[in-house]
Length: 208
Image (tube, rainbow, N blue to C red; front, side, top):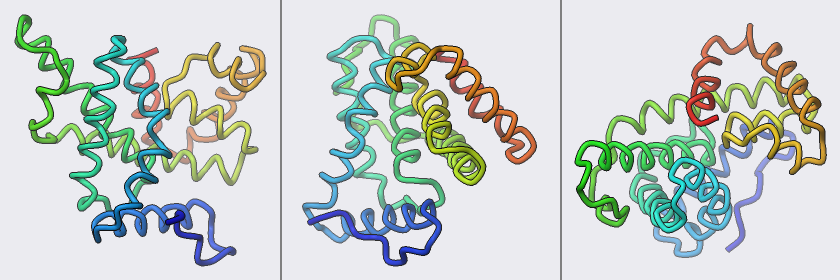
């Protein structure tokens, strides 16, 4: 099965993508076995990079990435499409990493294997991180209508995926200064239109 097509070519692209996300989630919940692999294939690489940056250990990062998708699958019934499926998935990945760190630091010599966290319930941190993901989606909406796509991509890489300036510059073939200038101008655009912007900025600052 292919990903559902946009039903209305004149629809706002962000609204259309969210509608497709909802339909894809509905297909998974309806038992379509070809639907969830689409979500996995679309986001695995970026989720793994996101987790690896926060965990460090390759094997644990692989386990926690798999755990993220287990939780995504289990939680799809609560996905309402108010944020993109991408941001919602990253919110769950962030929560999985937080739970892993909290588990290790609290018990010190306790088990660190991510597999042992598999049956732990998804706690209220998901709600907080999904709220942050919604702010990021709002930033995307504003920037998509006021900045060129290249600047939106830079913003998403920096604040959606917590990539370092140098990494973004290398990936996009730009200088560090060009990336910094793009981000600065995007933040200026967002300052008045997204009051909750600090939620996104602080999230990156913790892992910069």
